[in-house]
Amino acid sequence: MQCMSDQPARWTQATVYPDMWADPDDDPRDKGVSPDGELATLQDFLTGYRLTLRMKCEGLDAEQLARRSVPPSTMSLLGLVRHLAEVERDWRNWISGGDPLPKLYGRRDADFEGAAAEQAMVDAAYADLEREQAATDAALAEHPDLGERVGKDEIAIRELMVHRIEEYARHCGHADLLRECIDGRVGQ
Image (cartoon, rainbow, N blue to C red; front, side, top):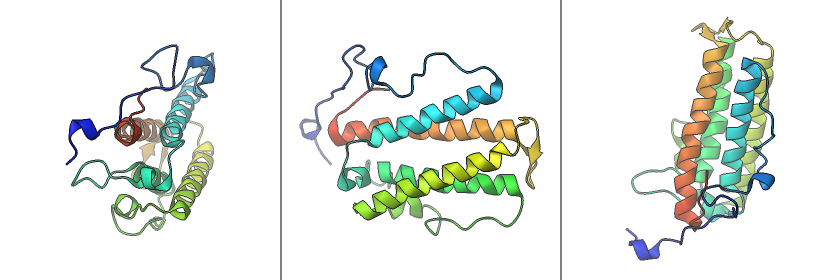
């Protein structure tokens, strides 16, 4: 266990608001006017959290991305990227109601446990995440009515969208702490 003096100093890149990740003019999540309508608002929040996760991982090498939080946890930033790719794939199972798609990384929790400090694995994880996000987005685009119920559990599209936002938001909170432990960078 590391003692406090071994921890990196806290810092932020932001100069306007010290509790921010980036200055407002440099933050790709700030698009100005909020969207109109419930579906557009949900999609905007999801996009923001997706960007936040990427921002928390930017500038780190494979070793830093694969670094585990605190024992016995297997959580790492790379594990989060892999986990969210796996989750995106699983959400399509909720929509289709057919035979489930196979897991990307094998058995349960392999997304975290198998995350290793290899650049090829990092590249593959980002490619998996982008592909799975696009596929789930496309599947949901076929159901623009938020009240429509889909799949064998007849889940409402609205509930699925809110659950997606919740999943990314929760893991962005984890990413905040993981990043701070890696190099001391803070900010929402």
